[in-house]
Length: 148
Image (tube, rainbow, N blue to C red; front, side, top):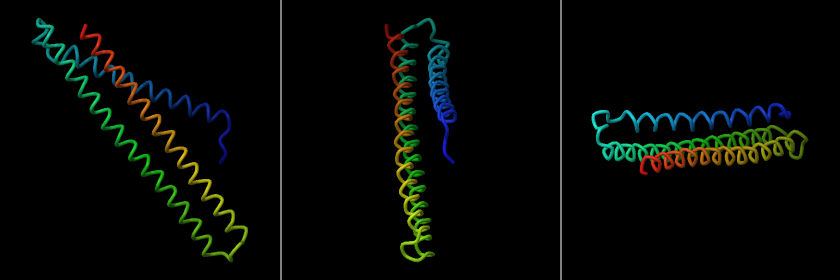
């Protein structure tokens, strides 16, 4: 099925909304952890700042770890899609006489599917990296604000 202009725009809007939601949740998590993690030490600002820096580091580490897992999952999925396309083209090749229309079409389709899998995988991994970087920048900004 061929995507039209509206569905492509809708897909882009969904991706931006998901990224925004993820960043806002990360900010809320860090914000809550910085203010409410150690209520008994509120009279001592240095203890709160140390706690907020530790939480910020933990958030950044967790974000990097989760981004790595997501990228591995994306690459694995792309590999499975490419392998399925190869298998299907091979089955058509075995079932038909050499040089038939169906065989040529199956090979073209397999090549097209593999190309799209690579493109989609790269685009999704880039989005994961962008989201991870946005969260890390936000955490750094929050840590800098508390550090002053």
